Amino acid sequence: MEKSFDGWLSGFIGVLIFSGSLPATRVAVMDFDPTFLTAARAAIAGLLGIAMLLLFREKRPERSDLISLAVVALGVVVGFPLLTALALRHVTSAHSIIFVGLLPLATAIFGVLRGGDRPRPAFWLFSCLGSALVAGFALAQGVTASPLGDGLMLGAIIVCGLGYAEGAKLSRKLGGWQVICWALALSLPVMLALSLATLPPSFAAIGSSAWVGLGYVSLFSMLIGFVFWYRGLAQGGIAAVGQLQLLQPFFGLALAASLLHEQVSPLMVVVTLGVVACVFGAKKFAR
Image 1 (cartoon, rainbow, N blue to C red):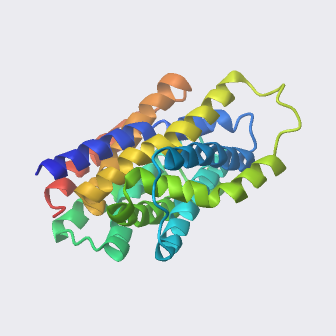
Image 2 (cartoon, one colour):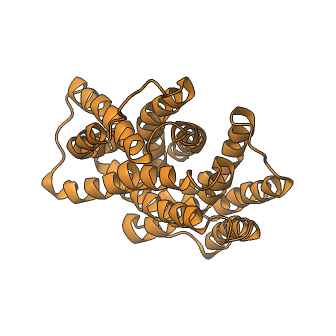
């Protein structure tokens, strides 16, 4: 019971940290190219991750772990950051945050396929209901608004769910923070080269808000958040703790409204409250 509680607490802290990712990315892509932003955040986090691994003298992963680490890197180090950065050039962060409500379902599905989770049938009812509320909201906005932006966000959710489940499974063996650090280290050569290749010709036009956004997604979204998130998934169950992501739109919408002064419609609030209610139902039947 204590281990399960610790898992849910760690997962909740991770969700709080991740809630600032899309607003911070939205701010950063106003001045930074999405490709540079994706590469730079991974490179900065990768250098910090390697420093942590050396500081604590962590043992190298086995060769059999490299494929799983590559999946984690492609999903959460490259895929999700790049696709969301591109999407945020077409949609607002408030709109994109709603799509994050689909992450619990994606994570749960990959948790079954890759992590061996076996939730009860009622769990899927609540998980699908929460996802349906999110999808219904997106459709209510009109698919002609920005089909490209919505498509990019859906792609980001799929690769992120896979990266979450794969990383959580590997965390049971290597440890939570070690997994994200090794994944960052694995992708560092490519991300460092890409960040240098896409370096802005001048930083004079880069505003302070963009720098703050880059700092947040590099330190918190790309590293610290995963320390808590992978620990929570490994301890509390991938499908179960993954439902905490249904809370992320609520926190993200609050940040988008307060920091970016984006409009949050009453429908957004109603949908968010609905998916928040679903997390409690899913939690009850997760095991």
